Amino acid sequence: MLIDEFLPEYDFEETHDIRIGARAPDVYAKLMDVDFSESVIVKWLLRLRGMSSEGVTIRNLRKFRFETLGEVANKELLMGLAGRFWTPWGDLQMINAENFKAFDKKGYAKAVWNFSLDGSGDETHLKTETRIRCLDAASRKSFGFYWTFIQPFSGLIRMEMLRMIKRRVEN
Image 1 (spheres, rainbow, N blue to C red):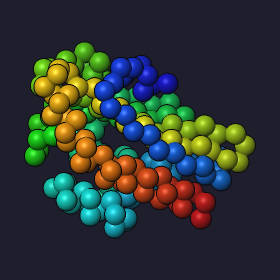
Image 2 (cartoon, helix red, strand yellow):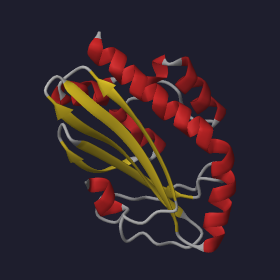
Image 3 (cartoon, rainbow, N blue to C red):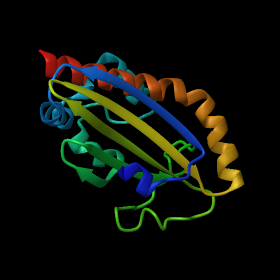
Image 4 (cartoon, one colour):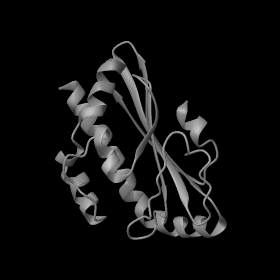
């Protein structure tokens, strides 16, 4: 999987999954276009973090500095970013698929977030996984403190995204 290729070692991880009554290509197509800002939960939590909460789709996550690191159509989409996530504005760094693996700036962390699909017949198992690698002991400590408070909300956003995709595909 792409996530293993780009961030095989990590300090923090979170996964969520859902089963959807549809073929993987149909799920993947909807995954890319669902407007997550239609969810009051997602909109409220993004605003709380000081982020734009309008027109939030996987296709336009670049406005949040997420970069697509790799894609295997109908199987996996991997996005990443690097910064000091525990600071007010995140001090996000310029990364892309070419320089992400080599990024090793002390005091920072890098994160990957994927959606993976495993389809058999008319059912697809859609999973999202987030991994964070802190690049030194100080960043690990700072991120760990931050993660204690933000993780439940991060998980809530991801679970809501999965439910929204399921509703769109199955309706």
